[in-house]
Length: 114
Image (tube, rainbow, N blue to C red):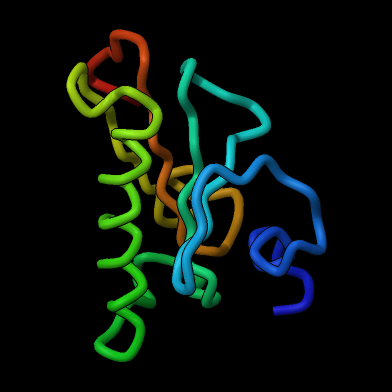
C-alpha cells in the first residue's frame, strides 16, 4: 500500500505525534482535532475498511482495543469517559481507506453524533 497515508505514518515516512505504539498498533494525534483528546488508533497492517476484517487480521483489531484502554488511562479520560468512532465507507465519511478508530475525549460529547 505505497500510497496509503496511514501506512506511511505507521512506517514513519510521514511525521506524526505518536502517543502509543506496539508491534500491532500505532496511535497518533489527529491533525484536525474535534475534541481536546483526539487520537487516531490504527493497525500497522493495512486493512482498508471494517468490511475487510477477517480471521487472519482480526488480532489487529483486538490489539487496537487493548491499546485504547491504555491510551485512555494515559490521556486521563478513562474515568470521565470517551468515545470511539470508526467510519466505514463513503456515506460514513471514511476519508482514508485504512481502518482507524478515533478516540475522543476530555469534553462533553453530544448525541446523536452525526
